[in-house]
Length: 135
Image 1 (cartoon, rainbow, N blue to C red):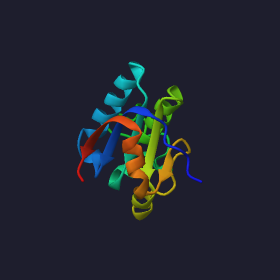
Image 2 (cartoon, rainbow, N blue to C red; image 1 turned 45 degrees about the vertical axis):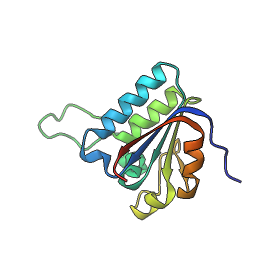
Image 3 (spheres, rainbow, N blue to C red; image 1 turned 90 degrees about the vertical axis):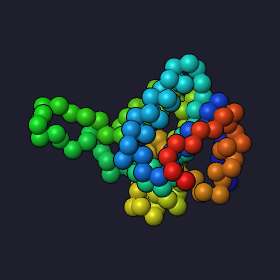
Image 4 (spheres, rainbow, N blue to C red; image 1 turned 120 degrees about the vertical axis):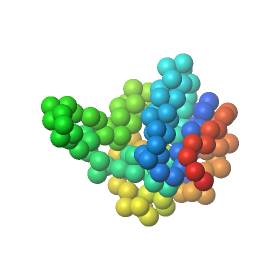
């Protein structure tokens, strides 16, 4: 039996390839700002956006050879830490079919995989929905 979708104030939908622009940063900053104001937020990713929380990303991005002493967190780590900081107010979902199609089926444990046909339930459970990316 599927888990019920929790009521949230905002649903952020990340579609397409958000890593090719500043969309990831915008989405994470928006989510953080909403959480800081006490909002309940769910994020749904489809398409290449499902790769943002792929377990294969590990903890850090590849090293920058111009600054070997610096470490940058992977998006998977940033999302995991954001969820850990707001466990009862932030919910991150990936489209199961999109993730499997892109070789990203192995997600970090904090992320829930959902079938695309339940997307409407997520929209219904949110007071507001914002689409970010391409359809």
